[in-house]
Structures are given as structure tokens and as C-alpha cells.
Figure (cartoon, helix red, strand yellow):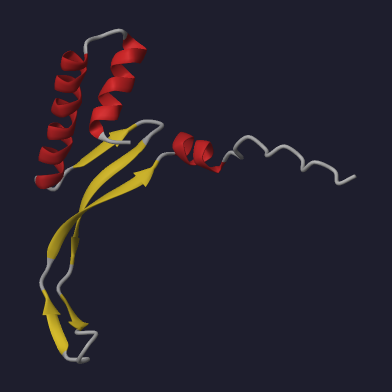
Length: 103
């Protein structure tokens, strides 16, 4: 699903215009990005947690030559799903219909 599809779906569900919903979705994404860039954490109950973590500097390998290559420290965004989302993802989808018997 793209951001555009998300905006269209939310607008349809709530009965608002796509422009209104687009502004809200963009503001939410901007806020999440700003908090993560500042090293913060965002917890959305029953959905999950967005965190910013630092990956320490390490030594990697060039796959072609096997030569050691230094990799600098960097910050990455991490998402951990919440309990309700995990349960929804683990729930079995609609079972497939039984196969037709062969006469």
C-alpha cells in the first residue's frame, strides 16, 4: 500500500476529503520522522513502537576481494509490533476451500 492508497482508504472510511486526510497523514509521518531523528521513541498502543537505535562501528568485508572495510556508526529506525498487531498477523487467514473430488 502506498501513501496515496492509505490516504484514499482513510478518506473513504471517515468521510473526509483526500486533501484533509493527506495533510493529517503527512503531519503524522513528519512528527514520527522528527522524533526518530532526535533519537526518541514513539509508542502507539496496540500497534507498535518506533525507535531510533545506534548501530556501532564495525569491520565488514568486501564480498569480491575479502578485504576488511570499516563501517561507520549510524542511526537506524526500528519498528516492534505491539501485542494486538502480532495477534492479528498470526491469525489464520480464510481457509482455502476443499479441493474438488475427482470422479
